[in-house]
Image (cartoon, rainbow, N blue to C red; front, side, top):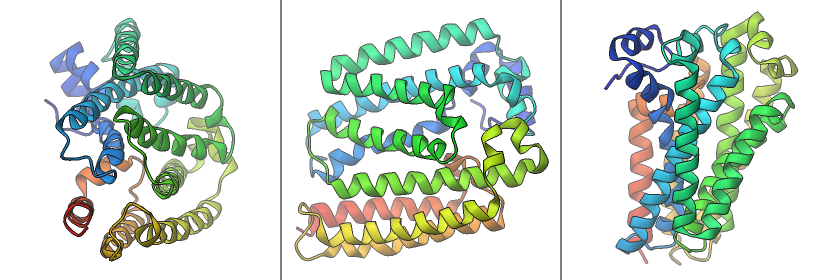
Length: 308
């Protein structure tokens, strides 16, 4: 399996050597599947992690959303192939570079989307309906929302929230409204910094690749980032001592430093290392940020399951 970044020249070489199968795997963007970890949030924070049957359901939901996401990515790449060819990095994607034939991409997307929907409805009806909603949201983003200023980043953030909701619905557990708020704010944070990265990276060619970027300026995006960052930190802090299902000794507040470090580290990478164009790449490649994320998850599990 190729470990080269999917938007680099090395990918084009590897996909040509490995053939259509490898090109298809790259286009499915397996690194993006890390977003679907949100499907386990409801299970963990509802204190059901020790129920193996629910863990199995959550894992099945994760696989379903990975299939749906990969199908959507293929559709997006097919729709944006002309624009991707003008992007300094995205032009190396298999469809844009010609390594993956369009008919094969269409067939693969159809199989992934239909198979994912069938699997979603087999889990339960509400989860299946949310899966349909996810496809509808991503389709609306591709066709309309990504061309509307501010609504473009809100629709991206809504996809993260939908994942968290779907994970809770799949295992039939309630989830704190605070976590929905924090998920939305965190997703907005990632979406806004992604727009800033695109704007700075592409400079004068930004509007040619993504027309909506002409509606933004780096200064505007930095102000939006400041607002969302402050709201995110405050919302998470309030969650740690006000959510009803948390330990009464308020030990969940011990996890706040990990969130602060993660936010500050990400901002450092965005402003000093020109990262942020691909949040999942940043998470997987930056060791301090990855370690912080793991420590946050471990600390949450310890507090929830042993400090009660």
